Length: 183
Image (cartoon, rainbow, N blue to C red; front, side, top):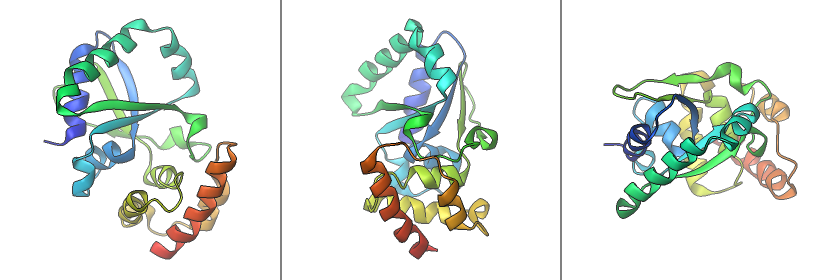
């Protein structure tokens, strides 16, 4: 089984309310694409992007945070966990990223409504750590997807909404050169 699926099924059992989550990182690759890289299926965590509105809503939702804590405690012996919940302004994305979410379907979930960003937004998120070999391997996988074909990468990079953090801006510029060479 894909580790991300185990994590999300555990979280779903711990919840008592409907929660939409946008997966990114390797969980999005493992659950959102046919024939994902094996490394994505073996990733030990799940990363999530929260919209600004959702972050505000969840801030006071003790039941959600309790369910998240219960999930991480239950999975701790296996080394699996939900790790980062990033607010959208902390991640490199296109301005209208929410308009292109791709629903993820797998049976048996009662409370989680899962989606992933469009392949182009996932590509941008993979560029936050510059030349990181793992992220660049994932970027190469994303560039092979049909949805990425014919995309003008310089235009994509120009429209990207990059957090105002000097280190992220520098790493994004570094990653642009590498991603262009992957095509």
